[in-house]
Image 1 (cartoon, rainbow, N blue to C red):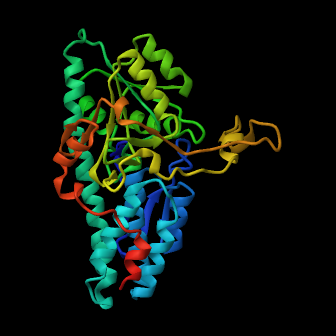
Image 2: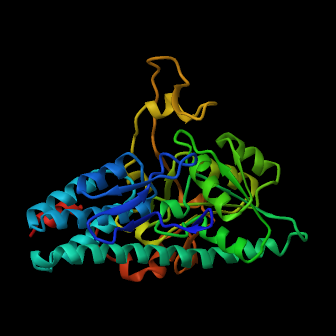
Image 3: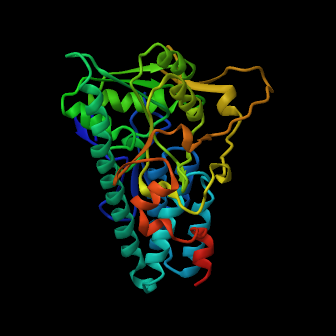
Length: 378
């Protein structure tokens, strides 16, 4: 996508194929900094510290982490160690496991001498595949916006609300929830996006609003608790969010606070859609209650970071010293509250039957095996 008129990707390999470049998302929107990763530990640290975040991008970064590990040591033992290290970085996003499985299956069929180059090729292919999935989600989601635009007066925008960041910064390109928005904007459809700040890490205010601004899409940041008011006041036509894991039955796990948006949308008759690339569907789980929910540091709740009046990046306390805080990173929206799932194969109902029909090649598969266990078998 574009930033200041320049084409950017959220991750890309160096020309020497010995390193990978990322945008440090912890510094946005105030500073656009490129970070170079050259080791497995660097890739794992980038995921854990949220220099990269978003389920699809986590998966692609992990794949490149495996490639960097194979460049250092292509042995089965090191492959197993790399899988274990990366699998432990973020527990909720299923794309991580999907990418590690793909890398493992590919590399274990090859002699060690060819693994380094093959690993970079496979990781790059996963990035290209992710960008294509997001593009296709955009094509199918565009129709939803076009239908709403038909009922608007000339110049009156379609108002979309989104939560967290499911944009190109969270994927290889285009984004999931934002892809239909970008395509609608490019078609000249009048559009306005309400961007939830998304406490406690403020991915909406810091990332989604930044990238929408870069693309010229009109948007307004709102406090998380304003979403219900906006829907009740008739100021939201459509909600589109992303997903970190969607179950076989259509339950959607996304950033904490998504469930509340779905409840408000249902009460106010606002369509609520999740943009769901197939690697984020976990056909081994029937219920969202089985999804492991990551709990992050209390400090993310008790402190906030930003720029001071002097232009310095500072972190300040917003709670009393020693205050207790609970910080679950995700929640689950049950399928009954989801109007539909926007996938790369079309908009489908949030149900086992619809997902199985859309993805028959995956719906009957056995549960994905943890990456570390897969490697350990060989």
